[in-house]
Structures are given as C-alpha cells and as structure tokens.
Image (tube, rainbow, N blue to C red; front, top):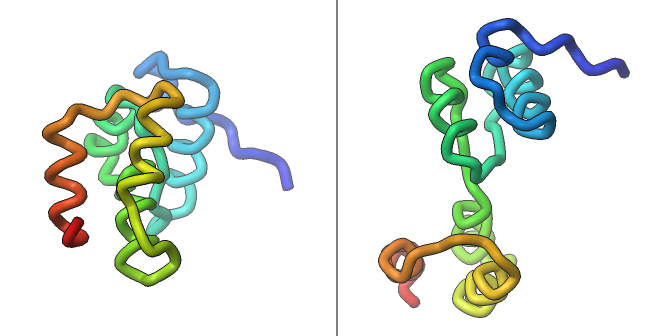
Length: 99
C-alpha cells in the first residue's frame, strides 16, 4: 500500500518526515488516533482535529489494562533514554494509575 501524499496544510507546519507521515495517515483515515510526542506535531493535530496519544499515554493505558504491573519503571527508562518528561508530568501521570 502506497502512503498518501502529505496535504499542504500539514506540509505548512514544516514538521519532520515521521511526524508528517503519521499526521497524513490520520488525516486521510478519520477516526485514527495519532501516536506522537513532538509538541509542534501535537499542535498541528489539534488544529486538524486529529486525536493524539503520546508515549506516556500508551504506558498509562497499558497499566490500566493490566498489560504491565508498574508504569514507573518504564517511564523512568524512557526518561533515562532521553525522552523529556518533567517531574511534574511524571507525578501527575503516575497518580492517574495509583502509583
């Protein structure tokens, strides 16, 4: 299956190729949730009405669904691997899953 061409409205945001591709797919497939962490890409998605979930949201969902027993070690691993997550964001997220 060939990837759809990136609409001009997404191109105008001058995002990276990966972010643009994800947004193009979601834009051309209504009801699709885009998985992305890049702030500019998330803002573009909001303007286009594309639902978004980030990596942190994926970890929390996995915890809520019982796919993982603890979210904290995964989040700490993401952070130590270079993902920017503030202490406040981590604490708020972990509170949502009773950690």
